[in-house]
Length: 80
Picture (cartoon, helix red, strand yellow):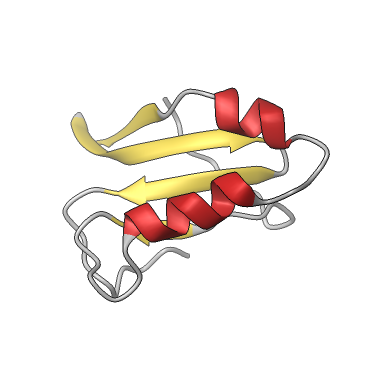
């Protein structure tokens, strides 16, 4: 899958090994958001994205919200 993040989309980016802003807690608040496409977002699968043939993380999306998990990264990941 090609990961393309739009500037007008809402994209919480979380790093799997981040102990400061842990991915599990952040996923919970994203799933609890009340908005018109919440059901669609929560039912969407996490899709794997790759960089140079290696798994780089996952993304779950229902426009305009995407939740991105970055594999093998800590708190300070460059996202843009």
